[in-house]
Image 1 (cartoon, rainbow, N blue to C red):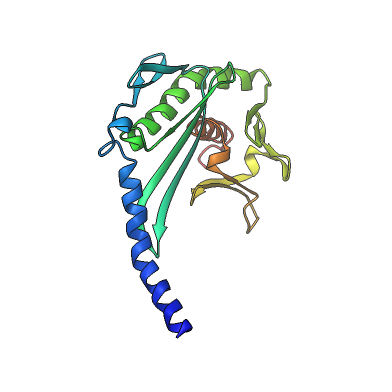
Image 2: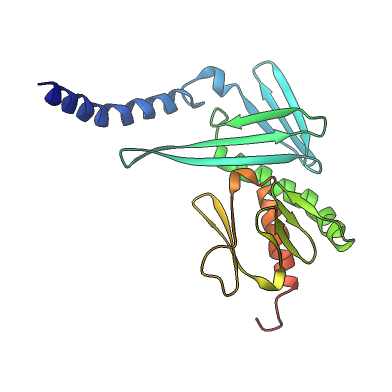
Length: 211
């Protein structure tokens, strides 16, 4: 009897839990919550302003903003029940703001934030590299000559065979190696779009003619 009861409870949970999770995610969305709907992200040419029902809360400039993004597909018993977004914004003064699904259309403003940071900061990043500087993207160091991590050491751009993003992780492969040379979660790479653009620019500059 105890076994049958446990089996029945587990079976019920398999059907109920996905529904409860979906309802909870829906309740947190701006579509159903007036409090959440009052939250706004205003994008401008020079930066963004985060506001709630009482007005502006925080402001950030594109040329000095650092962001970490974490996008998670949520499943329950193999059924996709939603996508969670978490963008953590870091200001130069040390203040931070977290933006989630509580702000409407995260798939749009998240991408826009990354693009604007890249637009504003790429010229300075390229100039710094040309002058011999090292750019630090979390645990990944980038120079004009190559890429390095504390665990794997350094690799020249000519050695890098591919840079791929799979399941929220950046895999860097070296020529002649079966396994990835390094793997880093996207959630741990600041200004992810800027990082990818810098990598692509440097790899292109070191790619053999006709390759």
